Amino acid sequence: MTLVLISLALYVVATCMLAGALRVDPASPADGWRIPATLAMGLHASVHILAWHQRQGPDLHFFAALSLVGLGMAALTTFVARRERLAALGVFALPLAGGLMVAYRAHGPGPATPLDCSSPEAFVRSLWPHAKKTAEQLGVSAKALIAQAALETGWGRRLVGGDKGVVSHNLFGIKATGWKGAKVASGTHEYVGGVRVNMRDSFRAYASAADSFADYARLLGRERYAAARGTGDDVHRFASALQRGGYATDPSYANKITAIANGATMRRALAALERG
Image 1 (cartoon, rainbow, N blue to C red):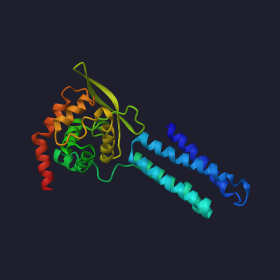
Image 2 (spheres, one colour):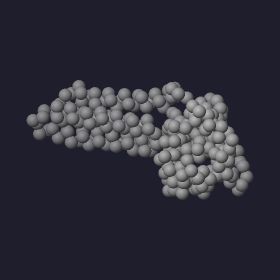
Image 3 (cartoon, rainbow, N blue to C red):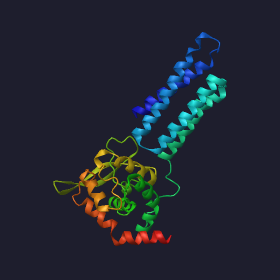
Image 4 (cartoon, helix red, strand yellow):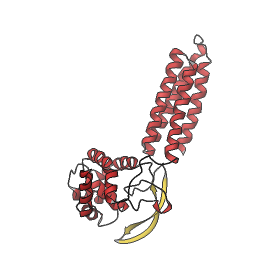
């Protein structure tokens, strides 16, 4: 929320300064307005980029990129061509359009192709392209990622927030600690001293399965999970490294992922995928 307020304030300042710059005669010494206007617009774009890193979501990345395009267009048309209407379009309309699209995706209906959890085969088919892409990034087995998602969600039947009819797309049980994006509360359990304890906690919510995988890849990019990256097709080595890194409190977490990856249900799902 703080970043949003700062961004909004800088947006207003940038717009006002740009408006002041547009009213200045190019031949006048008072044309020094151009420098602070440029600085303010640069700060505005920087805050959007910072917000994207904090939110860890591609929607804000798109918003930041569109803001940069708009601000660059404003700078070019103001300080070179001095075309007021184009400058106004750049500094206001383009970023505003991006913001509306981000808000629609964040609070409006979900993606056009929803996650199919009607069966393990459908679950794997829905996630396989994302798993392949993320597995290549991390140097691990796509089957291992599907197995972990299956464990965390019961093959998609127990997505966090599902008890309230919310589609969180949280496929890896990632909690919302320090998260700036959308959240959902859900029942869960942890192991304390080897004893299972039921509780409620907040989890991250995503607009799509693709966003869930992207955030998961960023999480596994942390140093604590370095041993899990680059494990290739060795599912047990990957899962064991996750457990040692503190991904889950379940003492059998690695063994459960391995069992799912090598189990009959996974084999049937992958065979169905190959058949098309």
